[in-house]
Amino acid sequence: MQQTPNRKYTAFAPVGLVDRDWPNRVIDKAPIWMSTDLRDGNQALFEPMNAEKKMRMFKTLCAIGFKEIEIAFPSASETEFGFVRKLIEEGHIPDDVTIEVLTQAREHLIRRTFESIKGAKQAIVHVYNATSPTFRENVFGMSKAEVVQMAVDAVRLIRKLADAMPETTVTLEYSPELFTATELDFAKEVCDAVTAAWGATPARKVILNLPTTVEIATPNIYADQIEWMHKHLARRDSVLISLHPHNDRGTAVAAAELGLMAGADRVEGCLFGNGERTGNVDLVTLALNMYTQGVDPQLDFSDINAVARTYEHCTQLPIHPRHPYVGDLVFTAFSGSHQDAIKKGFAAQKADEQWAVPYLPIDPADVGRSYDSVIRVNSQSGKGGIAYLMETEHGIVMPRRLQVEFSGIVQQHTDTHGGEVSADDIWRLFSGAYLESTAPLRYREHHLFEHGSAQGIRLKVDIDGTTHILVGEGNGPINAAVHALQNAGIAVQVRSYEERSMVPMGEDGNARACALMEMAAAGRGECFGVGIDANIVTASIKALVSGINRMGIAASAQPVEQAA
Image 1: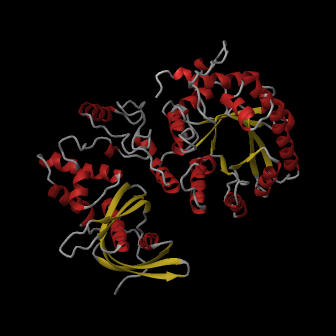
Image 2: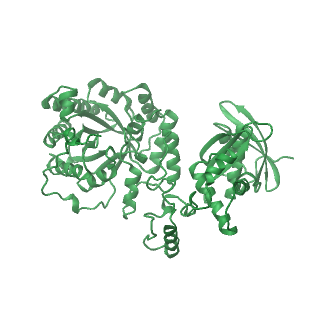
Image 3: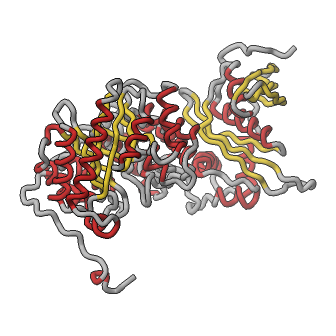
């Protein structure tokens, strides 16, 4: 790093806003939310989502409660175009959800974008062009007048195409790209020209998206910029001001919160902060921040673990263990004094009173988390490096959430019996908890078969001591086994699945497979099951049985086929 950074970088100039109101305002209602997970988030992935993952993510976003979802950049590729068509043609879009598509301000791209949304009930067409001096002068070589004309021409074409598609309610969204680096008076000039060209009215509002395309200033300056636009835009009653903060300075959430206080109506972002470079604003954190202040965010994160597992599956990105609200460690206390305060806080907390447990800004139960993981053994607490011993001594690499779960079992043992635990003690505890349970379900054997494009399974199990043969089909052996068990009234959801190759053990020197499965059941919470076998499919089924037994799920219906 340079000793004199001022020679290379200049501080961002403050906004001349002497009558700012935002410092005295509070957020008292949810904004309009727009998820760009399937566009901005997807384009930032090492491996973009395939159609199956995009569909799963779309349905998850709908279930959370998003009413506006940016689904694609359809003119960018046939894959993107095809996904838009699939959603529309197969009827996957709920009536109360508006899809959004992005396009550059170029005629052939706009026309292709409109081809993609044919048949949609309602759609937002999001058009943008760069407005900052750096882009005008160095990238495109355009004058201010040319930039304005480019935006206006694009909007006029969108209006013409929208008028020719009366079966679809089309809303215009415009973004002056690099808004935060654009002169405010020029940003206003472009935006006013856009709303005039569209013919914006209170009944036909334009979304003006004012992004921190690159976060280059402190959040207070962004708030000043938003409030300046809020107070100076023409046709303000015909405009929805939208925020699209990126996280280059690590302050996207703060920028969004201050931007809402400054007069914005809408926020664009991604689950858990996915997106280009350092990501978009994290909509989960932003929404739950509101929730902890008594504001209904109008988004449902009551089963945040399920959302997190879907996100990790679709993006192939891990969520940091200390990520606000959802990280594996956010409801964990290592400090003895913290543990004591939390225990006393839980003891004093009344169900009908304001939340006031020390060190916990939110009740874990509100996001579907368990109190069980709040206080647990640390590898540095004298109870031993559990995960380290399991890996080095027994070849089992545990996911972090399994580490949390199993450490609670070890803690319960040490609290009851006292003293230190050895590697052998830990293995006996692990084996007893995850590998040896046979009630109410005992695995006997299985046979796989193909049934058209589906995978079938004949599963032989003992249920409460009685042998049954259960049959099921699915998109793979695990899914087929889940469906087979449903025929016995045993209903579970597989939240995550990992398989590991264990180091060779025993005299034969053969490697074994270890399957680690996180599952959930109604009214039972979540837990892990573990299976070990030379065959990975057998290990997976054993893991499924292990988790069912750990949750204590009993059969609630007569199996469809019973062995003689």
